Image (cartoon, rainbow, N blue to C red):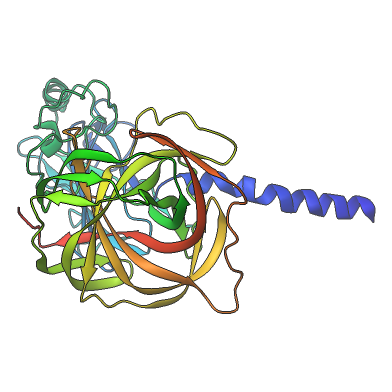
Length: 420
């Protein structure tokens, strides 16, 4: 009997670790684009087409949100990250990179999600990816010139997700293998090259060792400014990557630390009639003023961590919002501090990707809508990590005291794009 109890204990302890690798893989759609060998069937005789653009469009939860990619030279393969919630998607070839005169013969309608071909559906508990979403083209007997031309324009097909980013020369292209920052004075949203897919659970911070930081230049979709981070409680938020309603906690190193914006020049003018769409629905709101600068950070509970070698997420500038109404009860959130059941009270902040100190933006369409949260009645309350939390980022190392959950930040689409 003791042996059975010991075995059961070991299985219970191992089960979270056995499940952990699936949480690390972002929701995605993958497949190939091939040139038919004449039999109108996808088989080993078909030639891969590199440099072909892929466009994925959300149809139900966030209709119109787009995710784009490009097939790899020599393989014809693509793998595009999408948002991590239930959604139907149309997958199509918008035209770029297709040889002249070629036509799509599989799927039969020319695209997934165009009748009679069903859309690609992703959703929990296990349908977080779709593979073999393949395209077969006819009348493209010589795919080699296409692949060669693409290699000349883009030496590594997976280096950039869309022609928009490729066309913007950046000094950091050789050091950023997967996502190239866009250096621009007025970042303008375009087709989403890689929609930011992670949720973040944010916590109140009551202790920090940072000195004031002044004269930080920032540029986002709402304009350019210089901000000071000089509040008496300089660091106000620590945000962990999180899974929502059954999704496991992401295991990536990128966290966000929120620094209070105490001054801005020039003064911000509120922006009305802004629409935000995400997994919790559509919200119409007014953007009031900037309040936080969120900085990608490494985090550890054991001691000071090494700085992030190359952050995979953007900086964000967060704005107070008003006239927004959204409520949800008993949302399950899992992060590196554990699992909680929370009630969403109202939208509190809109965070948008920001170019800090001319470092560039990985994706100008990265946005987070943050909702105030409270622990749901009858559920276990958050007790904290049990000690100091150590962080490190571009502003230097810090030691924080984390107290309570304050917001859940959700990947979102902002429309219409606002110009400065």
